[in-house]
Amino acid sequence: MPIKRVLAGLNQFQDNYFVAHRELFEHLSHGQNPEVLFITCSDSRIDPFLITQSQPGDLFVIRNVGNLIPCYGRLNSGEAAGIEYAVEALGIKDIVICGHSHCGAMKGLLQIGNLAGQMPLVYEWLKNHAEATRRIVLDNYQGYPHEKLLKIAIEQNVLTQIENLETYPVIRSKLHSNQLTLHAWIYEIESGEVFAYDAEDGKFRVLKNRSFPVPNPLISVQSS
Image 1 (cartoon, rainbow, N blue to C red):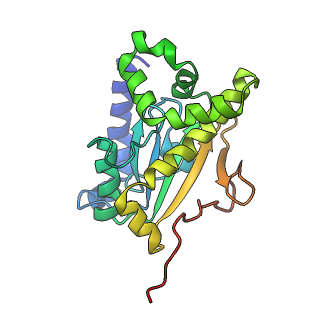
Image 2: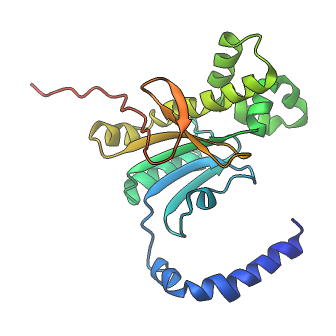
């Protein structure tokens, strides 16, 4: 999209959408109260507000290459700060990690050696935060065609990032007290469907009128 189209869209927003929703934006100027932390990829083909039909103020969004979450303590990242702020300051009760079909980051992960010279920063990002996904795929799914491997990598990566998210003390605490729910989603670009991980049978299923929350990994211990 040329910058001229971006500017034209900005003008349309200001002249039409903003005017029609002025009351909403005046309300939002006094603070935010989002309902969901939505973590997804930077890919231009996925828009959290579009696919969920959410309004401004409904979602607190973190986006990066591959929808990756550094494990707690690995580095003082923007992702870590965003997670902590969303849960502690905003009181988020649901977190969605949403991957997507045809993910370029996962394509790169499956041939990561080719990235080292051409895109060293992307190489380090994937190597540091998606290596577990790569090993799961390479060690357990040898012989699968490339498209199937990519689909598996996309799914496994979302589950890996859920596990990384669970390393955060604030997340573990909220899960322990049942104040937080995690969701693992895959958005399929070509169909518009969203698939959610169903732990009962270990598969991603089409998400329609019911949710598939990721089970709380913590075992509650009763005080003696």
